[in-house]
Length: 416
Ligand SMILES: *Cc1c(COP(=O)(O)O)cnc(C)c1O
Ligand SMILES: [Zn+2]
Image (tube, rainbow, N blue to C red; front, side, top):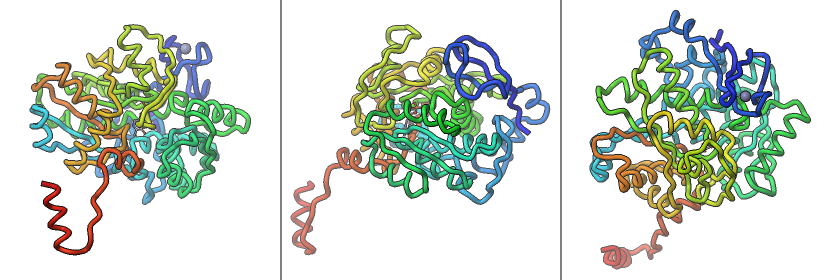
């Protein structure tokens, strides 16, 4: 049994019962927040009950999720989340930060943060007996849905832009999804997937559309609570850096911290910083002008996972930073490539969108938005193996040498 009791519109505040709506607010088309019965959760679950769990995955948070136990033990569906948090001392030192953590989402089963949402979506689909799940995706959400659906024996249909990185498309196909590459942008793929869901009665996973994705994504905040917040006694709030495209990850993380506040398990919400690519900065633009109106851009960035013309979860994403004392930061593609290289030196391999958050931290340090005493956590949202072409741009080429010691000696001299 779950503690899911309904939905609340993020814009007009209207509330709906669990069976009244499926996707957006019928009044204004805004994204819905899932409402949980915190009174009931508190009666059955304390923080200790979670902290002693031997289930090292998102499913340790079942009492805080709007779905019941999904089953499928022993499959990748059960190993999503509980991603590692690193704190390389040399990296912190190089940035003059006293406390720095990097939470690495590349260890998820399909190698990105998106598994959190797709796992919860697949659990929800089972509950409502939806056999086909459809999504539009720049690549990772689709790969995550395809992988989780494969683990649970469900069918996935994916629409991705024709220009999606080949590794992501290969993942979709290997996981057995029905894949359609759309000759257009991500936003075009979104539109088509909505029409297809309606026409064929498929369950739609789209980001900023299906209210359950943010519930999956909030598990990262719950992990940050256990892995970082509950081990620290700091006067300073933690600053969390998140890369932002549609704005659903940052909204989900905000929701996770708000849930913990509602339960009284934390007494301070971390500051949340959203990082966007300069060429895809619709939410950051609105943050700068101080409005809640988000206008579209013509997105263009190397970070394909955060390349979005009109973010589907922009309003909540904006508030995640505004309501927590965070901010939005824009980073150039050049600085994203440089961030990939720096993280790589510490054994962390990020795709461009994954490294964008770290690029944002470097910029925040330059501008004084973050200073030495601020404890910081940066998310790497996706694996560098997802986009090898970008990695090669960041790292350059290796020299080719003859297989002789003499040739090696010459090459070593060139390097020094
Ligand atoms: C989807 C994605 C993001 C951005 O998430 P949004 O919810 O679209 O803001 C960031 N990084 C990676 C690797 C992603 O796949
Ligand atoms: Zn509404």
